[in-house]
Amino acid sequence: PYPVLPGPDTPASGMAGAFMGWFAVDTDSGMILSSGHPSGFARPDGFPAVLMKMRASGSKPIAMFYAGNSAGKLSALLDNVFLRERLAVNMAATITVDYQGVAVDFEGLGLDSETREKDAANLSAFFESLDRYLHGPELYAIVPPLNSAFQGYDHARLGEICDAVVIMAYGYEDRSQPSATAPWDKVDEAVRLELQTVPGEKVILG
Image (tube, rainbow, N blue to C red; front, side, top):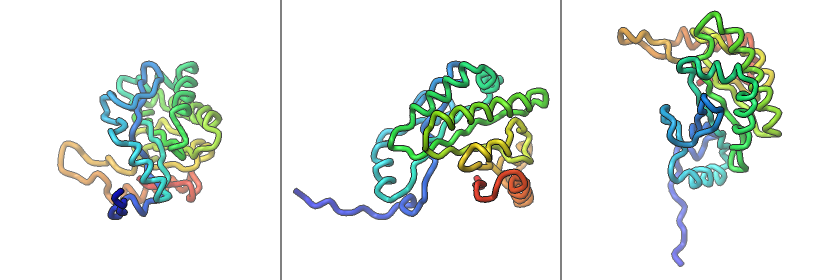
């Protein structure tokens, strides 16, 4: 047989870990989708080779789950205790030995001032359930920063539940004209606000 030669190092070779954006949530049912979601988040062909390469290099693969709040459907799902629990169970069941953690990217909560408190409380309740069902794997909350328009996130409580809080400190641009998506002053403000709410060792800048 021919010898198997080592391949060249890749950008992922030196990474401590990565969020694998391979899963999305059906906000009508609370089921997990690995393909066919309109967001484009999907598990690619050949994904086992990616996981194998990460294991070989000591890099942690974290399964990421995306949902947006189009037409308020994510808010409605989280407000339904049955669907919320079903989603937490389904998400935990999706994690196999191949993944060392879960990252939850639920976007668009709390834009409406009338639903902010309820959205935040329901999201925290979801994370509490998910944490119970995971039994070990790391848990990450991916959230808009405190200086964004989306205020349906209890950063302090998520910081208590999760291993880390990832702040999406971008998207500040004025879409009516050319402008920066992540101007330094807004990013700096986002980090400073987060550090007043979540312990620094748990904050990741996205």
